[in-house]
Length: 139
Image (cartoon, rainbow, N blue to C red; front, side, top):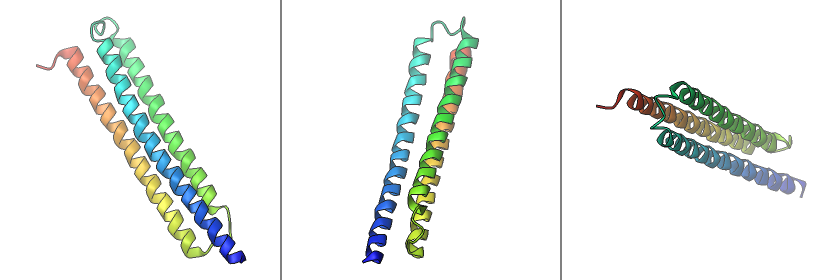
């Protein structure tokens, strides 16, 4: 009876950890998409005034990039810590289940980190490419 209850509790916590990591992945993708669209909107609105406010615009884009990247990384780390605490909380879980769950959480968090880094690189490269076209022309 006690073993069944421990098993059910472990499986429920493992499922909760997987749901948390999946939610982090979705939030990371949404934040990245919003970040890209926000930069496009800012650059579209500022096209006419870009020559006069070039320094202000580049400082603003740099600030948005740093804040967004830091926020997404912080969110991924917090979700990873919460998932690990939820999974590792009960000490009396069968070792094979524990190892499989922790490895799964680590792999999913690695996927989140890769997605976050990919979004950051795409946004950074796109931002640099658009700035070059705005300032020098894309002829």
